[in-house]
Image 1 (cartoon, one colour):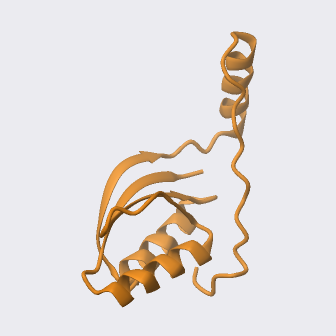
Image 2: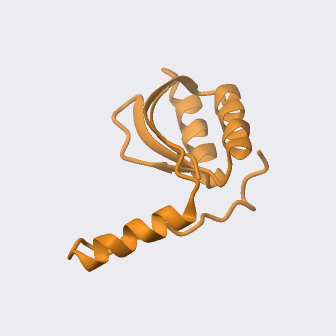
Length: 111
C-alpha cells in the first residue's frame, strides 16, 4: 500500500485554489491538513502502485496545483509484516495501531 506525504503549493488565484481543494477533498485519495495560504500538507494513500500512478497523473493535471513537494514515501505492501509489527507493538505496551477508514471513492469521477 503506497503512502506519500506531500506538500502542495496551490495557485495564486483564489478561485483556482478553492476548486483544487474541493477536488482533492472529493476524490478520497488524499487526506488534507490545514492549509497555510497556498501550501497544504497532504497524504495520498492508495491500494497499489498502479493506482498511485493514476492519482499522480490526476494531481499533475489538476488546475490550481502549481507544485508538489514529496516529503515521505512508503511502499509497505506486505499485510503480514504490518500485522506482525502491530502484534509486537501490542505485546510490548505500544499504543494500539490506528486504522484509517477507506474513503468513499464514488464521489470522484477521476482515477
